[in-house]
Each structure stands twice: as C-alpha cells, then as structure tokens.
Image (cartoon, rainbow, N blue to C red; front, side, top):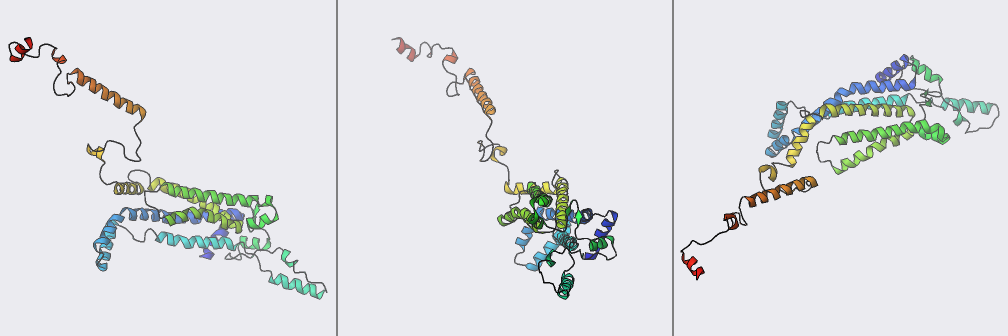
Length: 361
C-alpha cells in the first residue's frame, strides 16, 4: 500500500515537477476515491438511527432469550435491507488509507543519515592534526533520502540532489517551529497554512452541528468535538509543511463533501435526515396540544411566543364588538331576558289586578 500511494505521488510529480502540486493532487485523488465510502457510511448511520426504536423494542421483548433476540434482529435487518456494520465498516477502510497517505507524505521529507558524513569528517580532521568541533557537523545540510519512492523515478532522483524541498515559495521539509526559530518573517507562510487548517477545522465542526437532527449529544462527546478542531493545528506547528499542505487540502475537500451530504441527505421532506428529525420530534412531543384538540389551555406554553401587540388589540376589539351586539339585541345583564327599558318602559302590572288596586290606594 505504501509503494502504491508513493507511485501515485511520483506519477503526479512527473506530470509537473512540483512537490507541493504533487501532494495536492495525491490528496485529492485519495479523497475522491474514499467519497463513495463516506456517503455510504452516512446513509447507513441515518437508517440505523431512524429504526432505533424498533430495534430497542426487539431487544426489550427478547432480553431473556439471547439467541431468539439475535435471530429477530437479523430478520429485521434483512427485512429492511440494513447492514449492521454499514455505518462503521467504510470508516474502518478509510482510516488505513489516510494513515498510509500521511506516512508517504512524511517519508518524502526524510533526510539522509549523517553517520557517514560524520565519520568521514572526523577521520579527515584527525589525519590532518586538526581539532574536533562537534558543532560544525551539525550545520552540514543533508540531502533527502525519501521512503517508498521508486529509485528510478524523477522525484526520487531530484530529492537525492536537493537539500531543500522548495515549492509554493517555502521549504516543505521544514516545520513552522523550525523556521520561527530563524526569524518571524520567514515563518509567516507556514503560520498562514496553520491558520487555514484551524479555520477549516472549525467550519467543519459547525457544518456537522448545524444539521443535528435533534439527537441528545453526550457531554463528553460534545467536549471532544470542541477540542478536536484545535488539535490538528497544534500538530501542524511541529510537522513539516508538506504534511500541513495535506491537512489543508483534505480539510477543504471535506468542507465541500459535508455541504453535499447536507444538501442530499438532510434537505427535503423525503431525505433520511429530515425523516429522522420528524421522528425524533414526534417522540419528544407525542400527540397534539390542547389548543389543537379544540379546548383546554389557551394561554401560550412556556417557550412559545406571546401574541403580538397588534394581534392582542384586534382580539380586544372583537370582544368589545361582541358585547355591544349582545346589548343591542336586548340580552341585559344576565343575558337571559330583556330588561324593562327594552320592553318599552310602561306599566309592569295589568289594570284591575290586586297589585294595581293596592298601588292606586
């Protein structure tokens, strides 16, 4: 695997002799090959999460019979076309590929050992009667001795004659920490690359959190997600710039990949992510509210927006109009019978009645 990735890197260098461009093209090629695995992994993860309640029901029903539970689970997987390892298997395949890519890029920055130079220099100084200066040998610039590259390739032959891996205006074999020890101005391009790594890592984190489908995140996992974007820039500070370019390209590619995943798997009513979000919303709020059932609580629940001021005034006006119309129809105070004034305000007792005679006296 190391030789295969290294041969691809050497092939891109043959197309255009640039160390930086060869690393960029190799990183893109590996990311493109791994993209279908990433999409498959995401789909399997969403499908498993959507059917999780049914899986838990089967596990609860047959918790005392392990064999029966496994049989029912396998039948459920086959019925719904689920691969239990579909969510993690693609990631297990991708991880070794990226580790190999990391080692190959790191291997091209390896320099030749200084044992032979030190022995030859020491022998020459002693034969000439000179004094040994152990600091002089440390300042001798050594050529590269890249790993995994074919010895007949142009990239290997060029690195054997070089003491610097010049590309994109910087030495890709040196780290920001080393260059910063010389002077700050020379270290600026290295620091800019590390800044891009940091910003792209944080943006990826926001992309993933932005499409959260309502799942409860473990506090420990949430803490890890907050720390991870800062780990890669810290590592980049001490690693050769060739590896930092690999981090930059892979991060930028993943940003585009995550945007595509969000658009294709989380947008639209029929998407797996949208269905999962609806399912979790129903699990949190089973049934309809009292207002939707036609009675009960009419005041807004906690967390719901209160009516706007204009809407409240309209409701008050409608209530006042209904009261006025009730009075105009002669409902009176009790609303059961018209008042005396509404009946015409005349005698309240019939002539000749006992009450009328008594009042006349």
